[in-house]
Image 1 (cartoon, rainbow, N blue to C red):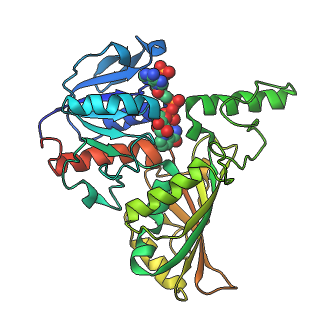
Image 2 (cartoon, rainbow, N blue to C red):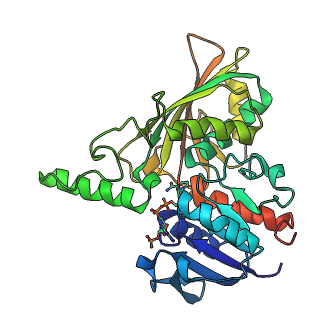
Length: 342
Ligand SMILES: NC(=O)c1ccc[n+]([C@@H]2O[C@H](COP(=O)([O-])OP(=O)(O)OC[C@H]3O[C@@H](n4cnc5c(N)ncnc54)[C@H](OP(=O)(O)O)[C@@H]3O)[C@@H](O)[C@H]2O)c1
């Protein structure tokens, strides 16, 4: 395999930093690595393999001859820079919401719909789904493939890190201040202070009372699973957890469901860790999550009042499974499929 030139835009953010760390230990051979961010971060040093890399301002770069550009700096940056990198010949892997529902842009979770990346997409851009979507589709894939689904209803419990570095800082500083009895910083990344609180809103609320996060979860799941008519509704909630999203997922099937079959399907799914009698004890929680590359599923039970209904508790590291690792696995898939050369 030839070594690749790689750019990470948003390298100083929580997703970009996680991606840099995962790339360092990945099998992808790197010829040159450009770490890019805003002007505020210019000159920051990051150790990568045996070298020190300097963070450079994105606005100052010209043609970088990048093979793979990872964009982790929000939708506005992606809308401007994804087409520019693609025009320079790079395969762009975009972590933002900017292109996910574009019919020409594949929305890829390598464990779920790898065939979506069998060829180079026409715009040269591949989209990484939203964090809540990735863990959901990885957990339900074996079930919705084997059994007919009537509908999916879920509530999410999303960590502060989903709102970036500022989200984590706001939770930490606000928690310290609340424990000290002071008022602390005003809420900035969240609608109201998150420490010791639960906020039933992730993103702006629209005219129908839903949020963009809830719409993304439904639309992206339908696109990835190639189930355009899937009934899916959710309520997305922010909780004072630093990292790791949880989801209480209720799947109603067309016919009664057998718990043994569900256990078997989940236990066989690569990258899913099932917590069930005789397999693994207890249930997963976001703070104590070993194997952060996996999706953790527990509390699996049939609804005693409806034999067609099944509950799952799904937990994953949103920075790894929900963003950086998925992006890196897309790159590895693109390299294996020779999509980079085309
Ligand atoms: N956090 C998650 O769990 C998660 C999950 C899935 C997807 N995502 C997506 O991943 C992306 C990054 O999120 P994050 O959580 O890592 O955010 P973050 O911690 O706030 O980091 C944002 C990064 O973008 C850079 N940036 C901002 N404006 C820029 C500009 N005009 N030019 C160049 N760089 C700029 C920042 O650089 P400075 O440090 O120099 O300001 C920083 O490196 C977003 O699109 C987000 O929606 C996040």
